Image 1: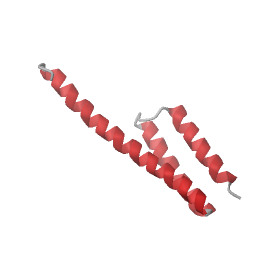
Image 2 (image 1 turned 90 degrees about the vertical axis):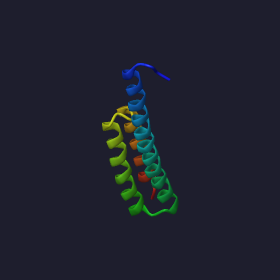
Image 3 (image 1 turned 135 degrees about the horizontal axis):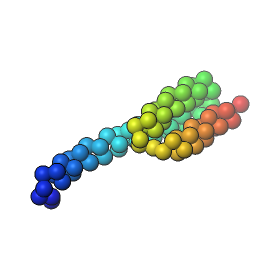
Length: 87
């Protein structure tokens, strides 16, 4: 454990940010999973709606600095391709 006051504060701040990042990552994974589940059911409209929501969550996570912009772009592209592949 740190002895210096500023080091103690940094530990607290890092723990807070880590918890926040975990929560946002978990939320994003859930929305991405929902897109793939709706694709499996075959409902194109529901898949498009799930894609729209997941895209918003991914972009929000990118804005917060949780994911790199290229990572978010790649994930959105793959999700959109999967939804568009539905006939």
